[in-house]
Image (cartoon, rainbow, N blue to C red):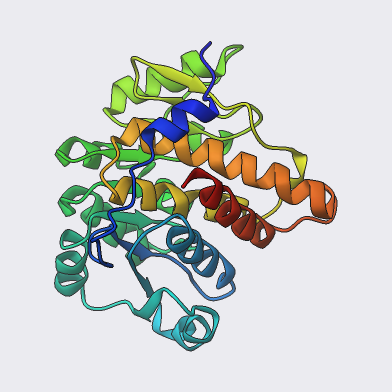
Length: 274
C-alpha cells in the first residue's frame, strides 16, 4: 500500500502568493461546539488558522459563545445565526467544517442534514457531523462539491462501513459507495477516494486523547479551502498532523503531550517548507 511521504506533501502544498491577502488563502466556516464541549471548536479553528487559512469563521451555540470569544484570538466566533443566514455564510466560504463537539439533538441533527444537502462549498464532516447523517446517508447524494468524511471506527460503522482484516479495502468500499473521500482514523490512518488510497506513516500513541481529531479536522478544512483536491487535502492534513505530533512527543513525551502542543510544531514545519 502506498504511504504518504514528505515529498508528496511538499509538492501538494501551494506556494504562498507574495501579493496575496487574507482572502487569497481560503475562507473556512466551522459549525461546532456545545455546552461542555468548548475545547473542540477552539482547537479546530486554531488548527485551521495555523494551517494557513486567511479567514476562519466559527459558529457556536449562543450559550458558549462568550467562552469562545475569549478562547479564540485569530478565528472569528459568533453565535449560530438563523438557518438561511448560516447557509449563506457557508456558501460564501471556500470550505466548511461541521461537527467538532457539536453534540446531538433532534434539532441539531436535522440542521446538519439540511446543511450537508444544501451547502455548495467543499465540506468536511467530523464527529457529530458524521453521527447526524448516519441514519440519513442519502443526504450525501445531493452534493456536487467535494466531501471529506473523517470517521473513527465507531463513526465508520454508523456510516454503514464494515471493517474487516484490511482497513483500506473497507475505507475504499465506503468511499466509492458514498462518493466521498474517507479518512479512516487510527494507527496508519487510511485516506481514499474509492479508487486510490494512501496509508499514513506518521503519528504516535500520544495522539490518543480528546482534541487530537479536532485539530486534524481544522487542518483538513484549511487545506481544502486553499483549493487542494479533497484527496490531497486529506492526505496532507493527516501526514502533517502526525508529523507535528511526533515532534510534540519528542518534547513532551507520549504521556504528557496535549493536542494543543501539535499546533506550534505544525507552524515550525510550515516554516521549514517555505
